[in-house]
Amino acid sequence: DAEQSNSSLIYGDEFILKLFRRIQPGVNPDLEVPDALARQGCGRVPAPVAWMRTTHPYGATLGVLQPFLHGASDGWT
Image (tube, rainbow, N blue to C red; front, side, top):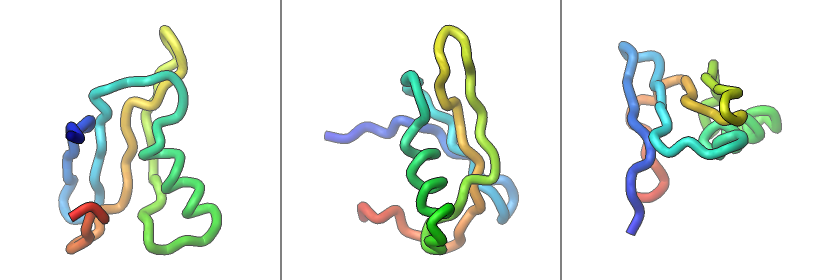
């Protein structure tokens, strides 16, 4: 039983901001994986535009901003 672990805000028709509700130390996979794929030239995953992180009390990703892809599916449904 999977539980949603982020909140998403869509800005106009251009961007989506994912804010992570479960903060874990290190880089969140929702940032790390799309960034790695984009660096390898994969055009099927929107590359991160910006992200937020904290260093106190530990380094962690708080959220990620990506291009909003109209009509995109999540790969699970």
